[in-house]
Amino acid sequence: MSIEIVEDPATVQRASSIAISTSAHILSDIYRPEHNIAIWQRTLSKELTKDIDLMLSQEPRLALVQSVTPDDAAQWVRCKLEGYACADALSEDVALIVDMFCCLFDVKEAGLRLTRLDSPMCPKFHFDRVPCRLVTTYTGRATEWLTNDVIDRTKLGSGSLGQPDHLSGLYSSEKFIQRVQSGDVALLKGSGWEGNEATGLVHRSPSVGEHKRRLLLTLDFI
Image 1 (tube, one colour):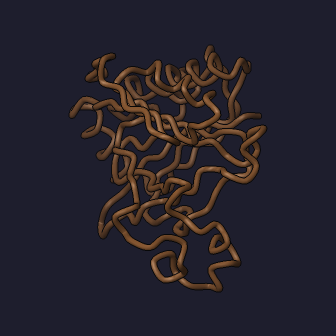
Image 2: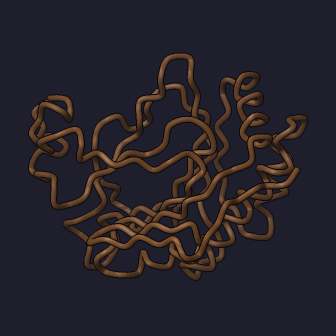
């Protein structure tokens, strides 16, 4: 099974805190001090997403966690997904992303999580206390996020006084919520990035939707 990726290197968008492109090279823009998120836009093949949906319908507790390298990621994921039609294509795609992550940050391994989600993992807006996290949603709704210029950070965490995001005063309008698309690969800069201690990307898990499922991949530094 092949993975179809629609890519046009000329399609690039750069704003004050975001870099988006249909070229994977855009992920290196995360090193720019002004960028809190870099998004590689891509479209996975219908065959792959169909096979992933089928797997999720049969596997209610899929939660793979492992330290992997570019050399062993494909074999490990393929072994864990043995018997499912998506095993080969999904494992190769995960290995590709692991290789890109390790090359980009000059690390030998990454902490991998490949998880089925039926409800939001982190339903309220927050920032991660890590240098950077890679996220990609293979099927289902994907990560939501806000730019720094539209939020009141004093309303994060306990500052919300227990109120939901739309009532806490964190942002003034739902129109400011931006969304990564299913299939896209995003790097989210956290407060652990040197010089970004006070401006980690504010984001949250999306609502999954009734009778819907997500397959989420995250990569972290070990």
